[in-house]
Length: 199
Image (cartoon, rainbow, N blue to C red; front, side, top):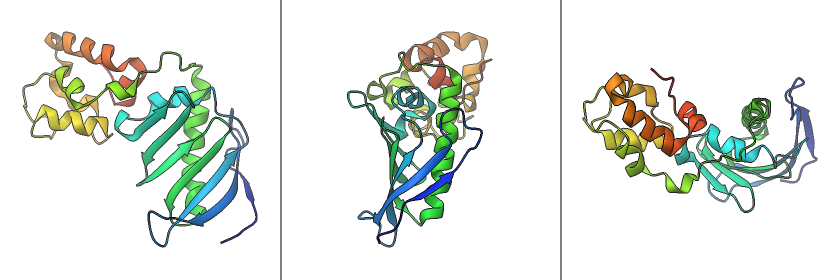
C-alpha cells in the first residue's frame, strides 16, 4: 500500500492551517478493509491543542498534558493530534474520506486559533465523570430532555449525544445554583461546547 505523498490545500483562507499532506497509508489493524493514515499539517499545533481540548465533549477527548497530545474518538474512529502538526487516524475508508475529516479538524484548529484563547485555563477532563455532572443537575428525572433519568442525561452529555440546553429545568431562575455548579466544574468554554446558551 505504498504511495507517494499527497499535498492538498484545504482552506486557502485558513488563519493557521491551510494545507494537509498525506504522509502514510497502512492497513488498519482495528478494522479489516479500512486504512490508517498519517497526515501532516502546514503549521505546528502546540499552542492550539490545549484550546481544542475544550472544543469537544469530555467523553470523546483524551488529552495527555505532559506530551500535549490530543486524541479524539469521533467519526467512529480514533484521531490523534500532535504538537508537530501530525495527525493520525484509523478506521478510514479511503484517502478522500481522510482529507474530508482532516478538513473538519482544520476548521476547528483555525477556529481555536482565531478565538485568541491560550489554553492555560484548560479543564482537567480526567476529573469529570457522569457523577460530577449529575450532582450539578436538578435531579428531578423529569424526562424533558428525552432521557429517562438525569444520570442517563449526564452520561450522554459527556459523550456529546445530548446538549445542556435540553435540560429545561436548568433554565428556571431557581436553578442558578445548579448552573453555577456546572460552570465551576466545566468552565465557560466547555459549557458552550456542551450546548449551554444561558437563560
